Length: 357
Image (cartoon, rainbow, N blue to C red; front, top):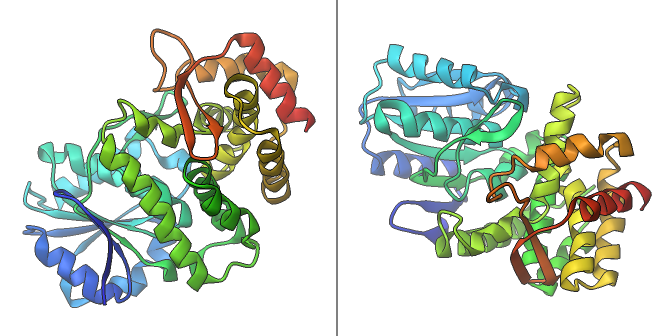
């Protein structure tokens, strides 16, 4: 039986029990004169064979882009637009995004802007995209060396979560997605946080993980439903991301890119330390998080010489107002404090803590 995690006027999120039946129903529900499937070079090889022979996708046109976040560019988007145009896509066509967060972000942006918008379905194939990128309506591309600098809010009609695709992932990509789940635990409840930090993500049981994915998606969807365009409480989802996006952009500039989830995990350490200083977050929980992240994710090799560049990258964060760097902090697990600021000295202190602990 199909399990619908959430349903809104614009989107249904389905925890898959029968991918062919659920995709057939979703395609039938979406107006379409032509169907296009967006993959990257990895999902084209590992995931497309799972669905390509479904009768509902007969005559579908496959579009393929590069697989790394370095390919999340305007050039890649232009390639998708050109393929849609050359394939005769209209405003009544359907795009199916089959891939990780890069594919769902870029594909959603391409779908939202081609002929002022066509319907799309997300089938996320990585843990990160299942719990984060494919849910919530944020789409976009990197630009000018900055993460997700160009984009729009644009909900897919359906998100179909099939954890069988997780079997195609390496350990690093599983851990990357799990970092966003850790964040969801911190902004939700002590019970969810406890389950996450005691689950063995190095040898995950997929049946248990499927239920945990559903719980994690439900956390994000509750927040997004309350604040779809990030005017208030949705900023809770940015925990770890002010520092994390700076770390990610820094690594990209060094041409040593890191996975988004790793950047978020690294970002949680200085931001939880900042929360201890500024909003009274419990020291023992912060220490527990630091130990877990160090054990699972290691450390980004920054030095104090990198602080000015990291600070400059933080000034470009989309949450900022009037040039003031904006943080989402916690006063406890599930106790969210948005629109927090920090001085240059405080930010450098958190980076010291990151390097030394």
